[in-house]
Image 1 (cartoon, one colour):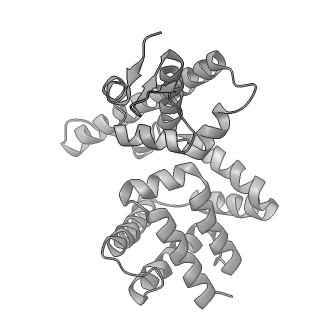
Image 2 (cartoon, one colour):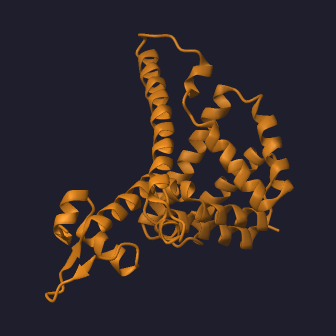
Length: 257
């Protein structure tokens, strides 16, 4: 059996040596053997397991979830690969639509094409919206479903300007929070609280009601628990998900009933 050192596996896979060491420490990817010199050596089985880790990471699974999936007694690598292929094919198809929308928008802005307003949003995933709605309903019950339906009904009358204004406000708040985190401001500081007041108002506009204390704290916990939200916020600024949730809790406990 051919064996590879950590450096060789890193070169093969593009995963850093540091990450491979971490995977070993947390039990996610153990080497096939450790030499008397302390070097880690990996075989074919470990390379295939690493591929599974990378596929799951590509699909935005957190490391804890990957470890749980790969440790299942009934884990089937062939079935997992087929499932990865189906999900990635769906993503590829959606990305092709998004690229087409992006190119058409650029052309329209440059005066080379005309574009209906309804075509501005081609390719954005309705299945993701459905997934979030199911997640919220499962977690918070029928009150969450009622809020979702009220939100959808209200937005039917939103104009393009309404959408642009809402998106701009959300972007401004997130950018402000990312800067506050980078500047080392405490999550319960007045400057951060002012941003969270705007976030709370933004959420109220979408929910069609003012979120009370437990609901707003619960939304922050949702950001922490759902991998899509965590990936989105942490991509903007490392640690932003925890910072946002902490700031939401501090604001809720101080100002909401």
